[in-house]
Length: 417
Ligand code: CTP
Image 1: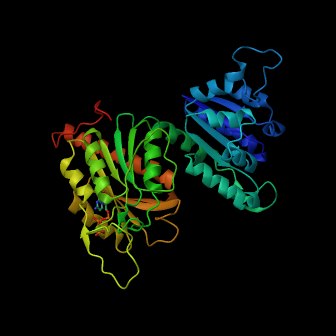
Image 2: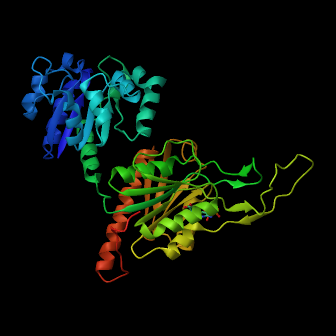
Image 3: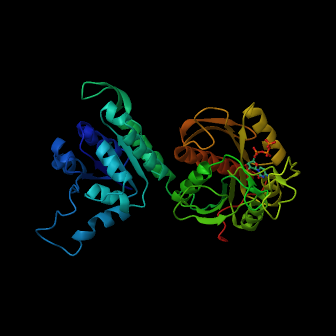
């Protein structure tokens, strides 16, 4: 497999040579591209000698000897690599990536590649902590870039703090884990629900909840990037739909139920990340309700989509639910696992500050009949991959059990939407 190491212009550029070595020890074909600033710190010759490949340094390198292919080299590289890892990534490079600039080979490659992208930032602690840098990081992570955070310690500038390039072994391990995940869901057809449903009271008001949809969208994006066919049944959110997913927009719990049941027959995996209204107004007024004294709302329960999907799924379809809890999360999660009959419940303690609703970060427990796996606080995008790793492990366990004579399981149906 081919990995491109992108090197930008910081003092840690010399450590990229060790990274190249560590990746080669994993039997990876390593190529290198350097920004102009990086070449002030390390000679391209170092990387050419280590990799045995020409180092990509400029969009214009063939200007003196134009060849018909020269202008599309960055596209060819972008298409042919299995991962792009940028180490070190400077504040300037992160800013250019976040804003979509394409003014050198590395940034152009980043925009053009469908491969997973990892960045390992390294810089002075104040540059790292600056709101501009943190905002750029948040933008990139939200777009699916995998961040390998810098370590804390003594920095080249003489200061002490966060900003030192992560350990080379840590970066290499992250690259290998990412490569393993590539296309490991190519056999799956995934149905994901996301967002908070809205139950109308009248033409201008509704009963809703605080779900932002971020966890469900992150799961959809991660599954898509791992090769799955993905349908996202989405209640209203402020989010951009993830690339390559098929979207079914819905408003109410009943519309979500209809969409889930319509697409369930094709699905090999259902993940119910949506916050579904448990009650809806028995009647929605046809005209705007006027402020003419107190009113009493009569509410009726909605149907439990997750429990119904468990009943109606075909053999082999995994069904995973969420449980957003404010007290005794594990106990409530276990209750829901048993009551709804799901294969796993992802328990979310939403009373915990800084995670859960509206946040970009989350921490959960992946609960099955036999195990409770704690996934500690991380970005929702990273967590999405960790959750999918656990779902695939569950799939493997069930397949082993069914091959040993237990319940039948089949997945990877060719009958896709
Ligand atoms: N869920 C569903 N249909 C509903 C309510 C919930 O499919 N009408 C799903 C959610 O998408 C989630 C899981 O069930 O995956 C748990 O949702 P939650 O609101 O935590 O559980 P409830 O069953 O509503 O239980 P309670 O509100 O009593 O905690």
